Length: 291
Length: 224
Image 1 (cartoon, each protein chain N blue to C red):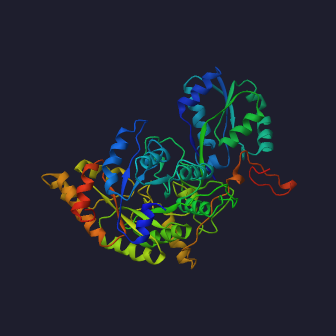
Image 2 (image 1 turned 30 degrees about the vertical axis):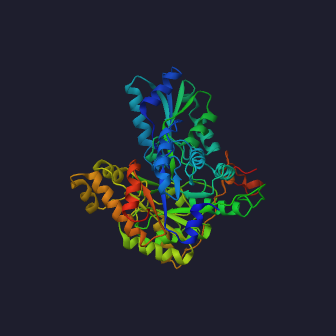
Image 3 (image 1 turned 180 degrees about the vertical axis):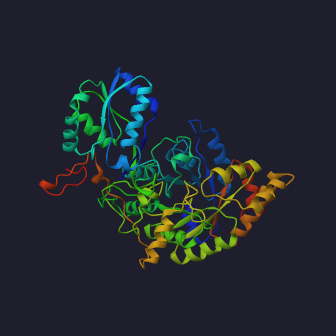
């Protein structure tokens, strides 16, 4: 069993980081991020063509993480592959030693760098979780026995701040019924809404790892609010960073406060550094979740 | 109804030039393209004028009742045989099915004058919205009569996705998230759907090309 799963099941507060595989074959910056984030994180998420834009596959990049001695969370979106390819890559992931799997819908191709691409969405992420859970039980999605089966620790995404909450919760309940055991959230700005999500999910046996964004610059804030799907930074927070004498330092201070608050509420924190990997160790130490 | 819109004029002219056509016969459609104001009597007359302004000779025109009806369209075109005979090409103001029906019935090249967009509803006169993908595996029974395959840009059966915000769609921010709308409508009808997971779609019923022969028993899409 992987350290990530073990820590969550033991009730330890976990830290996950996020890695964007390179838009090419040069692994230098990926390795640098792994070296910077790895020592502070229980596991590292490896995104799948994030932002609907071309990157090295999560499969290959996850293996890089593993080979460097850290634990990856292999991600798959439903956007780029049909059910055959999704299943095939899940089998591949297990043979490569990847134990943690996060299933997400994926951004629409229209928002990425290949806007003329066909969005596949043959399965949705709830269905993909069902497929992966079935594989854990030794069969493919048609119920046929696999010649050797995986034992993935299954996770999904959720957005605790998105209203209407009942619609969110219904979807999350479906994902848990499909096999999700941990949830990683989009960026949290309202701790009460995070508490609401944790209160709803814990009785269902699922863990919640809350997202924190390091809002490194005014430009990053505008980019997120305008371009990234489903991330809305409240005006008060945006103004706090934008009006600061040193926006970068203020962003680190804000993230530190957020991690500290989250550590009182959730099962873990997922840090999205937006390229500011070097600040992550300090944020975690400042929040008291890492020595 | 099949919703169409006018094809880029430069492409129509390029098509005609590709076969050095000087004389053109025009065909509209009395059904969908008439309702969509893209291939009825006024639009065929308008195209005749535009072509003549460019020096083309329009040898004649017709608007069959239903251009995708093979027998009816053949009969209609036979009535215009003397106008079609001197034509170098035919331009069809109908959907892709209508254009192919005409192409099958005449010897000279037939070109599309419209782009076929979707199967939709008339919201108001001249305003249309897509409603159906003709997927052959209908889920409207489970979704309160609102199609997520069509109305969700990602076509998810189980939603909303992670980009839903304040009840709005992740992709088209000015539209309501259809999954929220479906959940609301089901609840209003006393059919709460919490905890139900809709299974993956059966795309085998949509294999191309579809055909149905009701005289030989019930057909299904492209299944053989």
